[in-house]
Length: 148
Picture 1: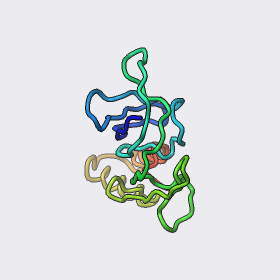
Picture 2 (picture 1 turned 180 degrees about the horizontal axis):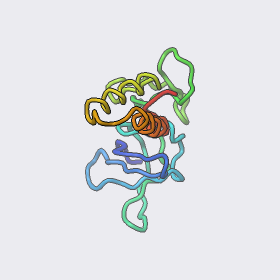
Picture 3 (picture 1 turned 90 degrees about the vertical axis):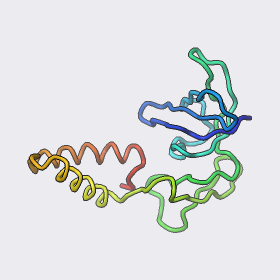
Picture 4 (picture 1 turned 90 degrees about the horizontal axis):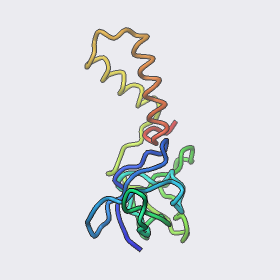
């Protein structure tokens, strides 16, 4: 097994890339080759995987969370409380690491986006701001950047 860190993962498209700890080229990651829910696969998360030769270069298979992995957030809709999740295969508890990303509430996200839009493009109308904010909110929710 090879250990690496997820560099990026687009859950809408179902693929991303992993940087092996040992160095070298990033390895292609497809959702069909994961043994863990895609809700746990985010940039910065450590994973274990096998490397296969894909059509366009190295490809990850049998991807799962690395033992002792930190930085995994709870699945959307999970109850608030201690920020841990169960490991995919071993049942270990994995701590949430706030240093990797901030998961905002939907309200916090809306307020932040509104402030950025107003300061960046003051000529936007209220209706334009609402449309842009609605689209960004859906995008953020789909990527796990907001909790609702």
